[in-house]
Image (cartoon, rainbow, N blue to C red):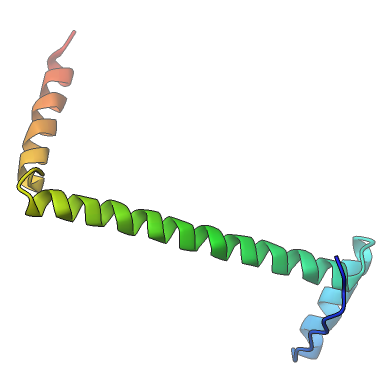
Length: 92
């Protein structure tokens, strides 16, 4: 992968000094550590977006089933599982 882009940022001198010391202690160039941090951030953000889209589709599917009269209310679900819990608790 070509390394032609330059990234400049401002930060506190203490943070820079600590970061540089830790990078040196791990025997890795600071730029390599920053690239790894950036890749991890990008991946976490991508996963978060995918999960949000998945969750939104599940919520919308549930809402659509309720609008269509196919779904069950929270009270109905709670009553069903309360009965199941009671049955399981009384089983030998």
